[in-house]
Length: 266
Image 1 (cartoon, rainbow, N blue to C red):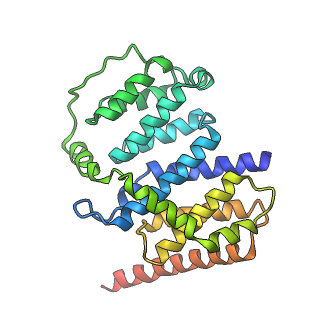
Image 2 (cartoon, rainbow, N blue to C red):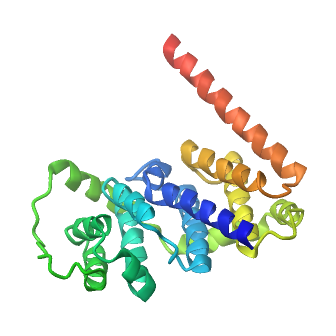
C-alpha cells in the first residue's frame, strides 16, 4: 500500500508538471488551425490527470507542490489556469487542506494571480477559494493593468481550451488499445488500479503519438516515458513494457542528437 501511494504521488507530480507547464500549449501545433489529433492528445493528458486527482482526492498537496502550481500559473495557457483554479476550488472544500495551507504565501500569490486574469471563469473560482485560505482581505482589481506580452499570451491561449467532443474519441483510443490491456495485466499484481489505468493511458498516448494519430510535444512524451520508467523501477515491469520504453527513449535521444547535428551543419 505504501509503495502504491509513493508511486501515485510520483505519477501525479509528473502529470502536474506536464499538464500545467508549457506542454499543453506546445502540444497544439497551431492555434489558428487546430487539428483533431492535437485536441485528442491534450484530452488524453487531461483524462489522466483527472483520474489521478479523483483517486488521490488531490488533498495530499503540500506547500512545495503549491509553489510548483504558482510557477506554472504564471506562464501557463488559459486552459492550464482554469485547471489550477479548479484544483484550488476543490482544495478549498476540504477543511484539512485549508488548515494546512491557510495564509501560505505561495497559496496567496496563486490566488492573487488568478483573480486578476482576463478570464471570468478563473476569476470566479479564485474568488470562491479566497475566504477559505485566509485571503479575503485582499482587494480584487478587475481592471488590473497587464503587460502587452501577457495579454497576447492569454489571447493566443484562448484557442487551446479542450473541446468536450474530443473526450469520447480519446476514451475510445484507450479502450481500443488491446496491446495496452495485455501489457498492463502483466504488471505486478500489487499495483493499484489507478496505476494500472494510468500506465494504460500513458502507453496509449505513446503508441498513438508514434503512429501519427495524435500530436504531442516531444518533451511531454519524454516525461511520460520517464514516469513509466520510475514506476518500473519500483515494481516488476513486464519485459515488453521495459523494452518498449527503453527503445523509445533511445530513439528520442538519437533523434535529438541527429537533429542537433543537422542544425549545426545548416
